Amino acid sequence: MAADQDLARLLRGVAAGDRGALRRVYEAQSARLFGVANAILRDRDAAADALHDAFLRVGQRAAQYDPARGAAAAWLAGVVRHAALDQARRRGRELPSDDPTLGDAAVAPEALERVSADAEGRRLRECLEELEEKNRSGILLAFVHGLSHSQIAARLSLPIGTVKAWIRRGLLRLRDCMT
Amino acid sequence: MTPEERDAMAGEYVLGTLEAAAAREVERSLASDAALREAVAGWEARLAPLTALAPEEAPPPGLWERIEASLPRADVAPSQQRFERWRFDHWRPNPWKWFALGSSAVAAGLAALLLFRPVPEAPLMTVLLTSRDQPAWLVEAERGGALRLAAVNRQPVPPDRVMQLWALPQGATAPTSLGLIAPEAGQYSVSTTAIRPSPGMLIEITLEPPGGSPTGRPTGQILFIGRLSAASGF
Image (cartoon, rainbow over all chains, first blue to last red; front, side, top):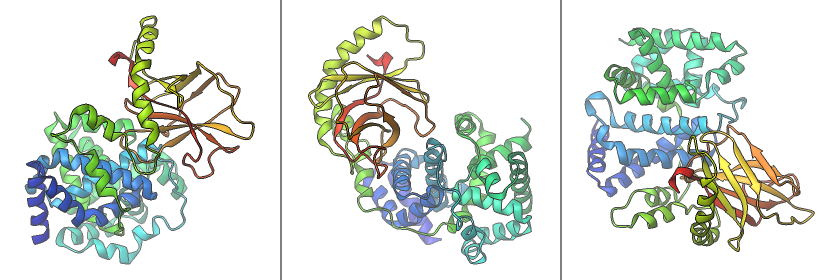
């Protein structure tokens, strides 16, 4: 993808200390990345803090991005997700998780359509659809909304041990399906 | 750990379900464990398309400027950098000035205090100062644990107001409430999972309406303020 190659080039610039390159990464990606952080934190101030931390990490770690391991956009999203998860953990994940709309968006068919924009996404989607509903919901709630095992357990009214085992089993099935 | 267990843990790390301690353990191991690094990279790549499930949303205006202000600068003296990192958008900037002036004066007194007590794990400490640089509260915090305050110079609080304690981690824009301090209290201790005391964290007490700030952010006058430092650093 041409856009991702541009992004990879910008990350090389960031690694070389070019602050203008970091700004261009921000301009090109901030709406997408802020959406990723806000889906996890569901609090715009907290999401802004997470994006702030994430861009400082991008500035420090851009040299660690290896195009052979995946797309630059995916690497950036990973940095943002972990910064948002750190925020969520610092707040004891005391974030609203009983929002009735939460999770529905993640499992709605039209939302899954967006995942299959490219070949990897289509493959992931096919494999997700082969999972049992409970395994799939657990994985989506955790990845998209940053819910912990205990929050997913509360949401699905299941014991926490069961949820842990299901998610683990779901992940390993997903891996085997995608290999 | 079997390769299967390692891969499952890497998957859970990427998924985000690991608790804070387990996630930190994975992060620590990443530097030295190539197989774990490989497993994490595999999961990042496998699950990356799911980020498309989050709807795009414009970040608040001014966020880039905030990021830029936090970036390390080669052309600015370190002390000035540190001062600039204290600035943040929605907090009144003035108290920092007098806090910066007052803190060095108090450091000498704090150092004397520390000589008389063992320091097993280098606790974090600060002295909260009044707007006239008078020491008002001694604060001691365990890293990631409880925060204890002792009044050294009790001040009257208006009868229709309460004191509310706040913490602002470095880099954060919004402080977190640590509860209300009773007007007559000479001591206060709080153990919270909402924040992890860390060096550089600002601690302040504001004057708020009964029941505490209605907005979740400080609304009243800042009575006392200080910044946590590792006691061993004095």
